[in-house]
Image (cartoon, rainbow, N blue to C red; front, side, top):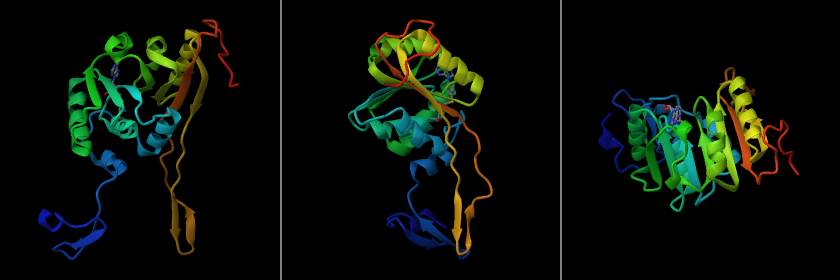
Length: 237
Ligand code: SAH
């Protein structure tokens, strides 16, 4: 089948291949693109992206700091959510991942001046020119190295978010958030998404599902009302 058959077609139409197969013509959604695009690092799966955008409360115009960029899947969702008035600064330590992410983002979103990629190790700190930030979104192995930097750079009421695959990582992150003394409302969730088969009398859950990806932890930057080292942090009002 030649691409010329697709060019100029309206979405939702169909083309028939030389072997007689019918293909539906639709533009890829962000979720479609992310699952098919070239990857360096493992991407955040679509099932978690929506929960991250809402959990981290990414809003139009927000100043977001992300690390690491990885393949850029989450970056794209963040860029769409902050819109033309927002900004997503994204730190990455590995050149080849940053390059792949850059290509993926350009291909899907075009050149966006709201995207500010930087080659920087966030464990060493947040660059002064990137503060203040409204939201910090972390998908890297040791987010507990970032809690005190985040406390400095976040606006009051700002949100710290981290995504990690194992519970020991969650525990260390939550402990670090509490010991910094500048965070409250520390919460962790996971997202279980189960597809259903709806076909005549066969109305039932799908046989297989993605059972585990990562744990989503959020915290709010609060005024320093928690003593450093205090275990329980601040309870919701
Ligand atoms: N969220 C991304 C995947 C991130 S994978 C996506 O959806 O595509 C984790 C990334 O963090 C890797 O690319 C890794 O190189 C980067 N990373 C690890 N430690 C880092 C650090 N200290 N500072 C910045 N980036 C880091």
